[in-house]
Length: 461
Ligand code: UD1
Ligand code: CA
Image 1: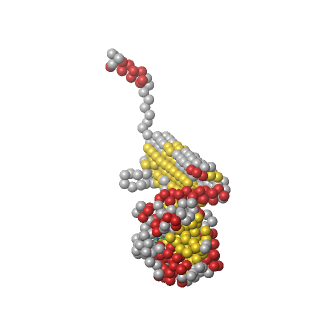
Image 2 (image 1 turned 30 degrees about the horizontal axis):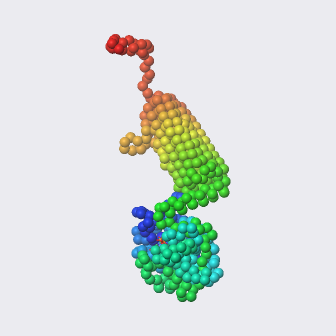
Image 3 (image 1 turned 30 degrees about the vertical axis):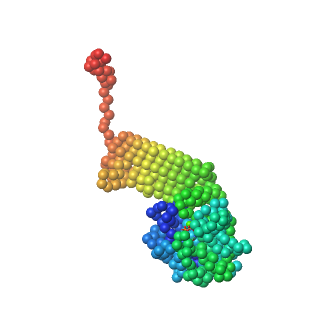
């Protein structure tokens, strides 16, 4: 919106979180709290100013391109925090957002700014009428007009009964805001410079105070402690799933499905109960993700099937591949089209070519496997010699028999065969058969001889 500066307050310590991490870096459905405020602000603002506390490198890093970051060296309250942004702000309208209210929508904020400007108001407060106002500032009105905001800890018993609360979102006329901030006094229970007091000051100076009630009171929910974090996450989680369902994803049991805000899923994909999809994960269309799967920071093509209980991190899985049940892809795997990674197979930094199969009980680490390769049950790439990791390369069409021990560094050529139970320590040329195991010994009649020997030794029994 034209000439709009958004100031995001993120300098608070977040004492109530009881955390070493700044509150606004705590994650809600995979995104730090501050990420939500920034995302909403980016939709609306010409200019974004982020107020951070001292030692807040993590918060600064989250700010990203084009955001002006100012530091509030001493945490003297929300009013003091806004004052730190003064030099970085434009003239005109200033919209203040709390950094800890992730459910605020850009539609509501747009409506607030529009109302503020249309009325020529000194300030416009976003309020919400809630069932449980505890912990929030209460909106005081006279003759219908907002006259001031009182914080819960400074409120009388009667004021505490008011259910219209301050969301900490305000539109301000810049000039009048800076003047009022200069007049703030820390005469409250916490001895802080409260931004809320600016409303009373502006009203007393004859300024027009507008209010807009959030259409959905959930938007007002601020996060001060971990119980609130969980409560807001539950709402956000449901919103994410609703959005996916609207876009054509089948979610069999929304109550038990956890999909982070950073995940995208194509239409006609089905999520079974107890699925967790997190981080920057992209899933194509017509995939099936069965129960108990946990996928993070991975990219799946179309028609990928995950049978139950797969754990997949930082992997690329191409179209029509099948994983599981019970497979573990550790970071750096690339599974080609139509490949199959089956039960109890663990892979790490493994590239598995199109149509190749490792169907049972294998470990593939630091491996490059070509196309249409068969990896027999129980095959292990021995990639670690106690000091360093080594690579195994297996050519197209090779057949690795059951229970092979492949000691890396190792190259198995195209179309080569490895006999079951072999320990392979030397490269296998293309098309060759390698067998590396003790020759079998057969002793005819041995069992009967043993039985006779036992009888002689223990005649009493
Ligand atoms: C604040 C409002 C309260 C409102 C509630 C809505 C004040 C005094 N109270 O209370 O009326 O109902 O939000 O959620 O404003 N911050 C700073 N510097 C500071 C202190 C805070 O940048 O010195 C930031 C925090 O990081 C946070 C925001 O300001 O993002 C609000 O601070 P917080 O302490 O959470 O205020 P509340 O007690 O929730
Ligand atoms: Ca808060």
